[in-house]
Image (cartoon, rainbow, N blue to C red):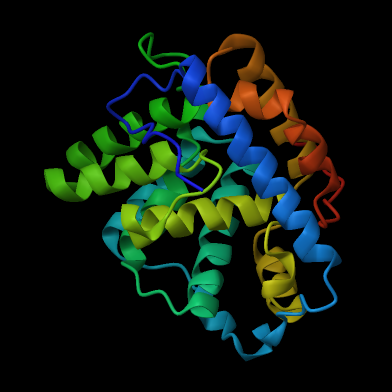
Length: 258
């Protein structure tokens, strides 16, 4: 199955008709594959007890701390905690798949990957038709101006964030882009749920509670669908993504998502 067009940070994020069709085909194929995998008696990849929860420790570099503070300042608590969990799941899945990655780059990408959903940024870029692209550009600007990363590193970060809303992101786009997509998918819809052991899941959720994440994210996705009808988010909503969020195997904490 071929991948989506890049939807990189230099694009507008708007999907053409052919791209919409390709996205629909990939989304349906991925959904059917996930259902078949869950129903297969052979699908018991739960040897995750060997995973070391220490893998989820957040980097303490100045870049990581600056990115975390920036995300916390812009994002509501339920969204900020989602960003931190995304890193934790991504790091654990990397251990499962034995993927080597740049820990600082992955963390900063995870921390900043939903800036396009923050009230301070959403809809501010008139040439962006997608929150992931808008967030990627803001994250790139922050890392260039405030952290001081070079252009190549900033581009890797922005590309990973812009791509994270694709159905899948292959390793050819870089391990950080691949893992950001995987970590976000785990947190939002529970994709690859059985591949992270219960004890590791409990550890992550005790440190980074969900704060009624499902309510907040469903509301955001519906808002994106209304305001950006040619975006990947709008197409996902049409394909039943909100129901997938609601049905994810997490019991959200009953707290206000504000």
